[in-house]
Length: 412
Ligand code: GLV
Ligand code: MN
Ligand code: MN
Image (cartoon, rainbow, N blue to C red):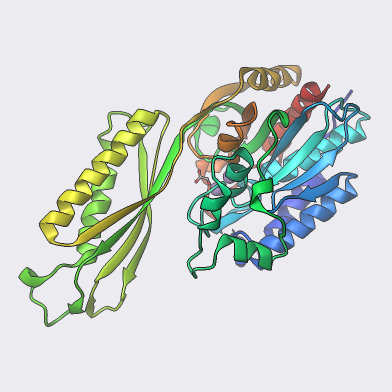
């Protein structure tokens, strides 16, 4: 069978979806369960139904679009990704895996392929941690690595619980029913932009992911003493922001001195209270994101960071409270899914390299219940999580072609 990808259709869909955003183009912001996210979901449902797929969604909003296979008892072959986007993001993160997955399925249908296993496109809810503090909500619940009780305790900045928010957007049913039955997937393959510079630098168009790095994140509440910026003399101060600043540098130092370039740490949020030019900060909240390909080294960086916080807190007379948001183990791809991707690349005469994913993905959590692998396509300068994120339609289409061939071989 000759598989033909309709690149023009795929490109126009990527462009169309980018306009469903809370921000003006070229910026994409699509935070989970906002009106933009809900419009994007409706738009995708429509596309999937037009492609002849039957669509269902679970209580957290994960959406499954199914192409019925010949053997309804055989485990599913899945593909997909997310469409939510962090504030000030671009068009491709997650979207390439969702719309690329849909295009791969359409191409196989168009080519007359009949799968034995059902093939499902999966749209995952809230891969990004923007609203509820931890990422991959949908895939964590599918895998059972986040309990429904723990999920219900999550709230957004306004104190709204996930249960209230999801019900407000029409997602009924119990979170208890989200977890996948054992053996649901035969395999899950996620197409994604690399979000790093290696493919472009090496001049290789495709990356097959063999391992996903271990992410952890935490929130620190720093509590000092506020007051008048003129009246309180320096020896008397317990400035929460100055203490937090030391902590931020200690976090950076912990990652830089871990002994491996694979350790990375980021403080991406800092809320200062009361936030006035003439007021000493009394409370500061920062978030810390730490990742590594090696779990023990990642945990060591976290320990160094905690020890630093205790030292800074004692020396400066401020309180520092650490709330761990997540500390996840890395994931390995399943060799047979990596093999299927590699064979598809070879059949298509495409060069590829094996690589580690330093970003996390829903596949990290799906790996706990399914054999997974990921396929990366290059993105310009490795840019991601910014509006100038870019992947060429040629590179994306090449990935979709290999994905389609892989789905065909896994579902035969
Ligand atoms: C996913 O968006 C990540 O932060 O790796
Ligand atoms: Mn992302
Ligand atoms: Mn992503």
